[in-house]
Amino acid sequence: MLWFKALHIMLVISWMAGVFYLPRIFVNLAMETNDVAIQRLLTMARKLYRFSMWISVFAVTAGAILIYLQYGWQMPHWLHAKLFFAALLIGYHHACGPLLRKFENGTNQRSHKWFRVFNELPVFMMLAIVLLVVLKPF
Image 1 (cartoon, one colour):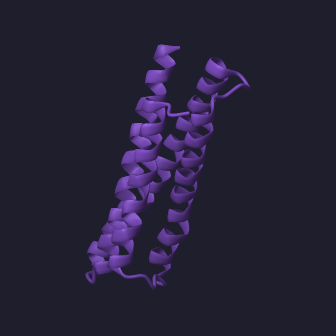
Image 2 (cartoon, rainbow, N blue to C red; image 1 turned 90 degrees about the horizontal axis):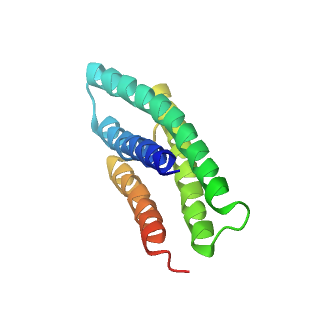
């Protein structure tokens, strides 16, 4: 069980690296005017999105197995809250796909300032998850 929990944590850390860095690439894309640099950033964003999406599938699968092994169908209330924030992170990550496609199509209408704010949202979700897991407040 502990080895599986360690695997889940490593997968989540890897996924979060992608979730934190991808919107940062969007900030740079929104500011960039050089075509060569834009293409390089788009390549980076595509590869990171694809890689982190696969990692998220493995992280969520490992988490679901852990929940079942540890709690069965009788989950504590804090875990429901944690799963809510995890679902928000999954939605956030999926929302990055259409934003990336807009950059690829040259139809992005958002400013780098908007992407700077967008970039901070997963930090708050992650903080909520970590606090819920560690403190188990209810």
